[in-house]
Image 1: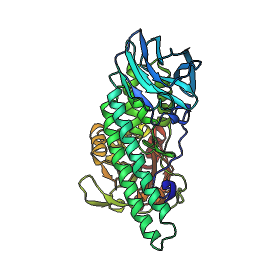
Image 2: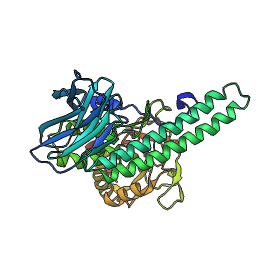
Image 3: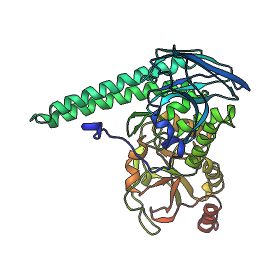
Image 4: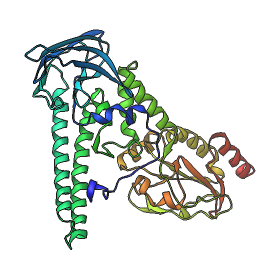
Length: 409
């Protein structure tokens, strides 16, 4: 229970770029946001910091992927008053600091006039920050985040106080369930906040938050579509922003390789009998692969959130139109989590003419281990008896194989 290591989470093997491992990790409770349109204009940050010594420098730095770039510095006056002015072309994160461990982070937009009131040694918790449209949103998030951390700490304290109790195993189970409920509720609220601010740089901040150290608020591997949506919105607005470019590069890599598992079972190979599949269809009725009619059947594993899968779907439509009358059929198994995403992708990609099944459990689906899946798209071409003919055949290769198998029919 200590450090909530027993909370079940999904971890996938995806490479994170510098932004997602770097400087944003220490913005957990200190980010305040401002968002407006993109203008080639200046911003000002001014205000008062109580408790500053006469010879202490206040430093303003811009947060970029993996680095802090100095912008300006000054010694506040004897009342702790200060003022910075700097040009800006698009919204960006800036750090106001009195030392390595005493800082405040703001998301500043061109033209904003921001006023700050804070105290030395608690810059991350300012008395107020005015003049930025996104401040209220981010302050609200930070407050809720602190409440979640406090609740989880209370559960940890209960655990630590009960280490010698004979009822510890039962207590641990109860504490874990409660911790999971707290984290789930917080994620739901954060997801709504992110969706409401998808076209704002606030979303970049949210994508990089941890609920507690080691537990990401949003997992790019588990929910890649969240990152796709934010990237699509921000790249259209701020394509020259370093942070947006870094996110865009990350998402491009995510789209190229969608990993769904680490260690799995043994993947069937040509000559093997493919295990049967019995999963619900879009109407909730259980359908078996063995009931699918066809001399040749393509068993295809995909998901609505998987770009390579969606790119292959038009080819499947073409192959189906060309070869179905000669004995070709398709049985698609989705690794989606949400039924609405799954059914909408079927509609949009015009896939409704063949069988679709899913237990809507993503990487926890029973088919992942049984079929040795490590990434999607993945497929098995089988004959009418269920024997594997070929594995992962797509595009022109699939057409050639179908020509070989059915061309003489």
